[in-house]
Length: 299
Ligand SMILES: [Fe+2]
Ligand SMILES: [Fe+2]
Image (cartoon, rainbow, N blue to C red; front, side, top):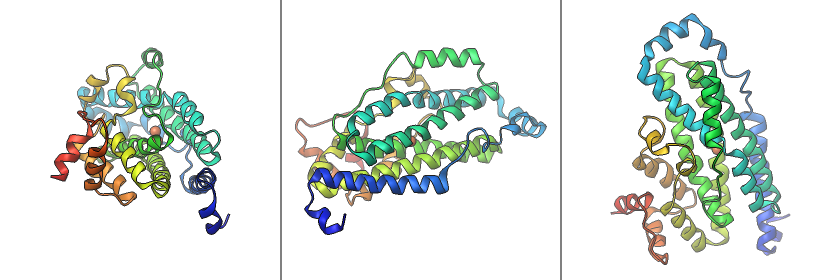
């Protein structure tokens, strides 16, 4: 469809056309540059080597190992809800080809994340199979449901959630690279790269919504920021305790600076625009999450 024909097409047709193009760009890039194999591309054999034992494992200490186990287990727990995420995503988008196909490709990529976290926990001996199976059973007792009602709000949520996840994993990659743990450095590198691509897709999706309806999208984004929480918060057992463990999360200040602000910028909004959009909401939304930070930062 030519750009002129698109302009005069119905909003529904424009959405289908744009999402198809966004998905094709995402898919082509993934196929050419981002595919990786959880079994063959992670240097698992290093876990068995003497060098790893002497230079990484022995030097880590019991506390650091316990922290690592909690981090990996928590990350794995969040990824275990992939059937719920994809099911809900598909229900929202089944008549929008590009978006529905994105959810499928996304689910495949996320499934590899759960797989490598599980593999590391078991291969490294941080968890036994029994311990892991008990944890998995506990996690899957709950079900993830959509945190926001509309497709547009979920585009905003996806953009924020994926960038937060990217930030958490890249922080882990850098830490383990410094420690000389090349298995974890490689693992987090692949996973973080996927998360960055997911965040980029959602930003493009949000940008399209913004072009269609700037005021409505700004208000939805403000609403999502005000009510934002990571998917694990209501689902992963003892999430509050886990949050105290270094590496499980990022600070709200970091999230504001490196997650929320670049997301706003990607559609041409400033924090002042966001504060304005938040004030327009009725009833006003006040949560202990991102809004106070935004107010603070805007002052
Ligand atoms: Fe992931
Ligand atoms: Fe992701």
